[in-house]
Image (cartoon, rainbow, N blue to C red):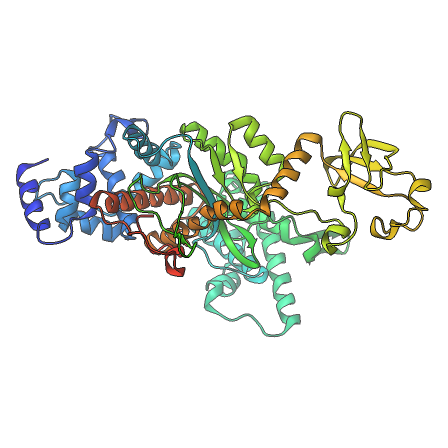
Length: 564
């Protein structure tokens, strides 16, 4: 640290709130050492900026939700950043493009999570995060950095983007292979700069024109006399995939006939491209909302229990005399991946950092009886989560004899009904792709039963039960029983505060909208955002300014507190 920089920065900081960047330098020192990024930055070549300094600049950039240009400006003129980076007062900083090159290098070398790993390692050494205890996880949608396009616009924009790429890569070939004058008029403007025809028939005709032109261009690119390298252009590959997904073409003696695929004939959402520019973005649906892009899963520590006011029995925010809430894991997926598919990967990520919790609070989207059993067996983690209740007609109606009133003897492979009759059939089966056990009672036993109407809707047969394998079924029954307990519900309330973390991430770092194209760079953005949020929370904790104990208001649950 240059002595003059330290002296001037501290003198300026003494006249107001101590800056986050300076607090981070004081408390954590050189958090991101250059040696940690050596794999991505060779020893040969022109001199460049320190990767450790660029990592810190990028984290602080997300803490203030700055663009690359604004972040470079802050380094050039911000006293607090010069202090944090250990720069001389007259250091001119760097060009904004350096930050983009830095992110690209991290992605190319698979170092997207390096900064979060380094921070958590430091915090583990200080005892601020640890294995065991409690954590909670939730997900939210992320909008891709592209426009939402309908199928007509998507076809037109994909073809336009391909023609643009070919015009740059092989202009002379393109003038010979395509009707450039006609296509320049048709595909010159971007699709968002004009309004499509209002008539359904005209829109359908336009879609077919796009389809025929696209197939003609693909034929030209794959012609024997065309340069072979044209087929490898990413834009051409996207065009080919998009046309396979959206069009049919039948070639006969009468010629080629192009048709659009019907909605029922489209590929599944996980495979269907949503943009010619971001080929990782997908169409997603959650809680009735559609979007194009990604989904992020955020895990954070929550070791302190919510305290209750003895007089009102209302939940209150705990005093910050323990460690701050810190983000321990970030996972980014395309929008079609369900929460349940991420339960195990999230635990693998936590295990790799030696930060597995003893109890993990999740919503019902992450859980199933099989996952509850699997996470306990494979990771030693107890999932605190609601499970789906019994969906039998009797359970839904709240009347009659549902499955819980039957006694199951797993060793004898037999069930006993409330009137004492035993089952005559016990057979393993597969129901809707999952293992199950089907139990049947003899129809001769059930037919004369005086309470038959309360037990089965079958007119002629006996009662049938469907169970999951023993270990899973017992866990499921226990979880359903727990859910009805007020104490369990109060404990599960701990999960709700993850919504505040999501709100903070959106409000502070702009996490709802991706800045970059592609899944890897979007994940990199999320990791830097998580590190920025952790530093903001640590700053509040170091300053001793987290929220005092107050009743949980609606605003607090929205996450306006930076410290909890």
